[in-house]
Image (cartoon, helix red, strand yellow):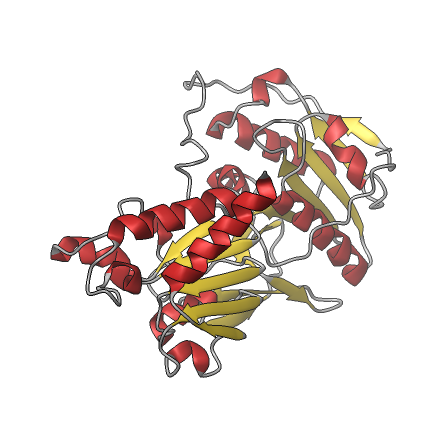
Length: 342
């Protein structure tokens, strides 16, 4: 008989579950129903964070020792290993976060198990089958293993999050004490970019993609890179959207052309970049060519702004296309957003 463990941790505040954690809990509930087996949720963090998911029907385990609050390989691996041995889980689900991905493979090796990452779906009845994408999300594969324990890291955004119930209270919470391993790392603090500087926001509801057209000559015959930077950053700050870019715009700095200074290859969307999973996407000054559009495979609502009525976006690659000047449209959008915030 299978036994499922959903392992997760709190967000940076240390008080609440992340969206990816809620997705893993919802997936664990479906896994357990599919296989007809018992399941549990293990949290690295305070037990109070579990109350909003208290009605999910799982057995809860908590490790809330102060020594394990900060992310470190040695301590996080010790926690996951202890929880797996305590619960005797044969299948371990976890969000594919940086903290979990860093230690999951090592713990799987310690327990003689196997691990698969970037899991996007599951199926089967008596035999569990999971799916993931390969070759830049062009090939979907179905995987099944008989070896246990089997660690599965779930791709954020591929499952609906667990619906929180504020009045719920988590019961059957068992605190687990983990022996502190020998450590050579001391966490002295966290350094992160300011909100205005952070342009990649995985949990944002909107993906805003800037194409090379922002730095080309405009209708007046002039390059308006400074205006483009002001408009784009203004929209990101007002809307909280995440910023993506086409490959041509990211690369043209090496060709001596005018560039947007805040764009890096980390912002690149497409065949040679990222494949995000935001609910909505807005492409501006892009042509909708296949290498770029492949990065939009999992965007639910795709829209674009383009002056070219024959561009790739208008040929079935976007749900809505606005034939207009992106400079004028986004200037007006920024005005409306600023008015709403006042």
